[in-house]
Image 1 (cartoon, rainbow, N blue to C red):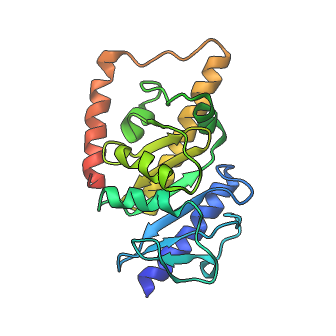
Image 2 (cartoon, rainbow, N blue to C red):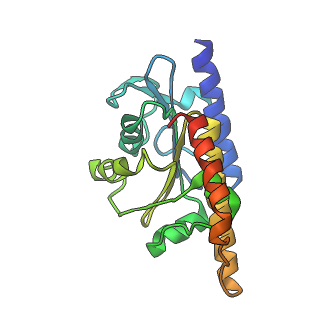
Image 3 (cartoon, helix red, strand yellow):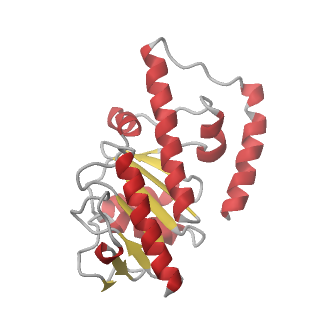
Length: 217
């Protein structure tokens, strides 16, 4: 059980980090991770991510049936399960409501590429997933086509979601996404962003390919 205990502690620490950085507020956002036995450890519904303890977490099987935990799983569990189904190498999912990235989502605009090297290397293209009601099968169906070719997506009029081979990677992608969105928003206040020259983006694409190989998908 040591592996499970460590994942539970890490998941709670991630919740505090996201809450402290204003990536979630109120009871918003939800996070999950695959356990060594193939189940999914996830955050509960209607509970602040800044106050999580391991006892608050829920364990579900790959079909979403709860197998442990006294609280109810996140209502957006189907979003997570769809991402896990799309690729076996994905072992963690982070869904947040970061203010700047969500502003792009509310505008119905995907995140621009070629603005910051970190964005091109670690995020790559970030698609905008059409609006679907929170917690429904429609949302799960909307995200699934994006998963294999991307590591992050904006959810129209909702927020953002990132995924990766472990919790730390998935969470850091969220911070990177919000950082790029914030810089673009600030640049537009003073005249607009200037893209990295096309010729200089080829080395970034090579670094991105290397990063994806390290992630295993």
